[in-house]
Image 1 (tube, rainbow, N blue to C red):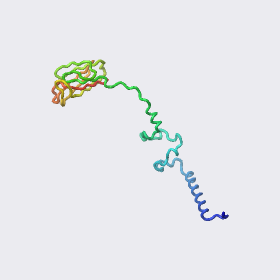
Image 2 (cartoon, one colour):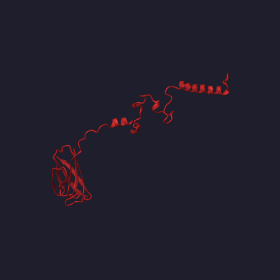
Image 3 (cartoon, rainbow, N blue to C red):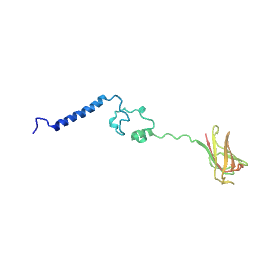
Image 4 (cartoon, rainbow, N blue to C red):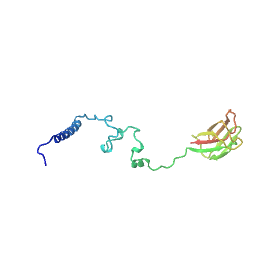
Length: 182
């Protein structure tokens, strides 16, 4: 049976509906443009569904704020791309030399020992513009374990001159590793 007159519950419910709808409309109509910002929005309240396509552009994203996991798997795959060809190795020339001044490993073309502590190492390529670095090592020859010491490597035209010294600065034939980067 239907009533011809509204009761209190129906009137209250209808009034509440109009207030709720009117309040939202009122807020939408009276808020100034751009008045809602990051401070007014709860964390994680705005998601993909609330954003229009193209609404967030690179100039609106703070530098270093995106992580790898923020990108889709397709985007990650596109950014990775295929691996390119290998580059030219930096350490073009190298040698391990024992304390007798003899190369025992690497690609040295030859060596000459100049007593008491100079070893002249030659390579098959040009050394112009190259930089030589040497470190003492344990190796063969008459002084296989150099202990503490010092080594100097200098590029001279088509060869590298390496001078070795004991910890007390005494010149001595000591084993070393040599790298020449060009």
